[in-house]
Amino acid sequence: MKTLTYLPTLLALTIQVMVSGQTQGNQDRKIRVDIMGLKEPVKMNYSNSNITISMTEYIQLLEEANSLKIESKKLKEEAINIEVRSLLKQIEVSEVSEKISIQKFEQNKILILDLFTKVPKNNITYTKAQAPYSESERFMKIAREMREEANAQLTLQARYGDMSNAEEKEALALDKQKEVLQLFESNYPQLVQTLQKLVVENKKAEQASEMGNQLVMASNTTESLLANALQQAEDIKITAQQLRLNALTSGPNQKMVLTDEAIGLENDYMLKQLEISSLRSKKHHEQFDLNRKTIALLMEQVKDENILSKAEYINSEAERLMKIGKEMREEANAQLTVFAKIGSMSNAEETETFALGKQKESMEVLDKGSLKAVVASR
Image 1 (cartoon, helix red, strand yellow):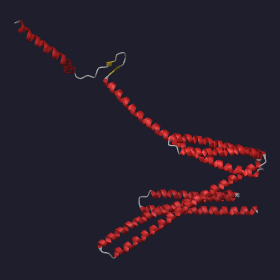
Image 2 (cartoon, helix red, strand yellow; image 1 turned 60 degrees about the vertical axis):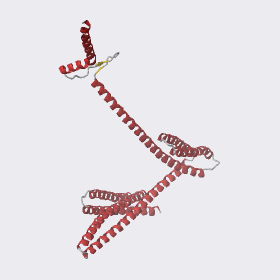
Image 3 (cartoon, helix red, strand yellow; image 1 turned 180 degrees about the vertical axis):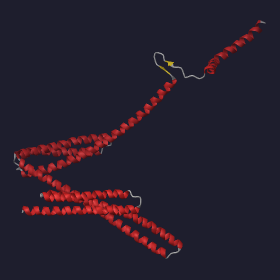
Image 4 (cartoon, helix red, strand yellow; image 1 turned 90 degrees about the vertical axis):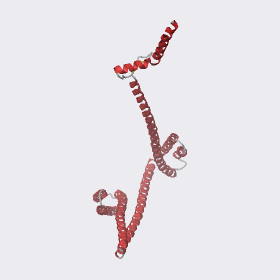
C-alpha cells in the first residue's frame, strides 16, 4: 500500500521539476510581459569596469564606428589622388623650369663663346674662364641625361625625384656660366655690356619672327578652311536651285520629294553661312593680332611724340571696334533663329572690318614717322 501511495507523488514531483527547469524563464517573462509590457534592455554592467551601456547605445556606437571606417577609406583614397595630382603638378613645374634653364643656358653660351672670340687666348681672363665654362657644359649634359632617365621611370615619385636632381644640375650649370661672365665683366665690362645688348635684341627679333610665322601659318590654315566652306556653300546653293527647277516640271509626288530635298539643302546652306561667318571672324582676329605685333614694333622705331600719339589714338579706336565686334558675335549666338544669327553676325563682320581698317591707318602713320626718322638720321 505504501508503494502505491509514493509512486503517484514521486511522478508528480518529477514532472513539476522538469517543467520548472525547462520553461520557468519563459513563463516568468511571459507573465512580466503580460503585466508590464515590453521594456528596453537593461543597462549592462561590465566586470572590472565602470561602463554602463544599453544595447541601443551599443548598436549606435557600432554604426558610427562603421561609418567612420568608410569615411576613413574615402579620405585615404582622396589623399592618394591629391598626392598624385601634386606630383603631376610638380613634374609639370619641373618641365617648365627645364625650359627656362635651357633658354638661359643657351643665351649665356652664345655670349660666352662670343667673348672667347673677342679676348686673346693668352689672356689670364681667357684661361681662368675655361675651367668654369667646361664645368657648366658638363653639368648641363648630366642634367639632360637625368631628364631622360626621369622620363623612363615607372612611378611618379621616381620620375619627380630624378627631375629634382636634374634641376640641381641645371642650377649648377647656370652658376658656372655666371662665374665665367663675372670674370669677363670684371676685366672687360664695356665689351660684355655691348654683347649682352646684341644678344637680347637678337632674341627679341627671333621671338617676334617666330610669333609672326605662327600667326601667318594659322591665318593660312583659316584661309584654306574658309575657302572650302565657301565652295561647299556654293555647291549646296546650286543643288537646291536645281531641285527647285526640277520640281516645277515634275508630277505631284515627285514634286513634293524634290521640294523637301531643296528645303533641306537650303537649311544646310544657312548653317554653312554661320560656319563661314565664324571662320571669317577667326581670320579677322588672327589678322588683328598680327597687326598688333607689327604696330608694337613700329612704335619702337618712331621717336616723334606727335606721330606716336596720333597712332596710339587710331589704334585705340581699332581695339574698341574689335571689342564691339566680339560683343556682337556673342549677341548673335544668343539669337533664337538662324536668320537672326546670320543678320547679327553680318553686322559683327562689318565692325571687325572697320577695326582692321583702323589698324591699317595706324600702321600707315607709323610707317611715315619711321621714314622721316631715317631721313633725319641721314
